[in-house]
Length: 417
Image 1: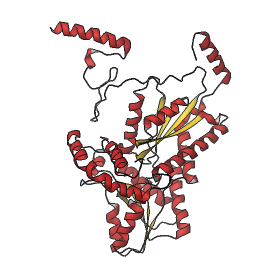
Image 2 (image 1 turned 180 degrees about the vertical axis):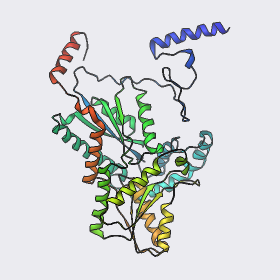
Image 3 (image 1 turned 45 degrees about the vertical axis):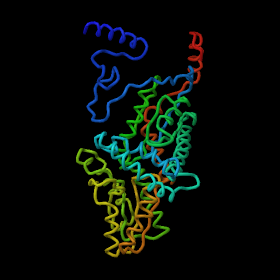
């Protein structure tokens, strides 16, 4: 009987070898695709997937194109409970974001959180929503557009066609999705893509999660592009310069505070204990920013957006603002270096809730300093970082005559396009 089963399996495997991917008995049912070794990661096993035929528009002799994929966290499509529920379901189902055993977490997520949180969060989103949509989306789109123009100019200076460079925006959660943004770049002829997560400080729950989504999509492609990724830019001098300029420009218009609070997004403390460098990277950014200021008041580094009852990175922004208020601090300014675009966490949690926390505790004057958004210094920094990371791709010489010859030769050999 065992011999009969094995014979039938061997016959089936032969079929798959001819029509799909190589499969051998030794890696059947192990949770990873054939030709891919077992992973030592504790994340969910890779599931088998259909290979997407993305070569339909391929043509011989096509000029070289580079793509830059900007990635931000994401936003609901609308400030409604239904849209927020859909967004949160995707966001909070990411095992990089919530490291609780899946069976337990699914019960909590679908049984409690997604039944209660969407309505509350929708009201908060409604409070910051603009006529053009979510602030995060509005600013991210502007950043992508400005980066496209800046990189096009950089290509022109290098003697290349500005159209050689394409920029697309993708969101880790919500729309436009990372797969959609990547497909958009490939449809424009980009066979080399630089992925730039818009998180200055690397963290597994943000930057690494972006990598997961990118390479999960690459795994589904038959004609996959070359992919490079940026890890972060927490200490890049151009980024620090943009932060310093933002703060000092604000002070020129509104005066200086007694205390400057630098508030970063928090993460559970156990992530630090397990080796995530995020905490250290935030502290370095804060130190470099402080050192760059021509005038440095008392500067405090804090962490916001705590979720759940577990201990997160400390000190908590809300507790620091309460303490400063109780001590009768005349003026506090809050700046969020880890957020390159204003969003719910900066506009609602800091500018609104932070102000209420501080003044309710006895504080006098509260100022929120806007994020980098579309500032010239920030776009210049982003452009410089992208060019550095593109590296030797930009040294590739495009020979138009050779492309024409390639196309003619391919057609002579029977190519249809």
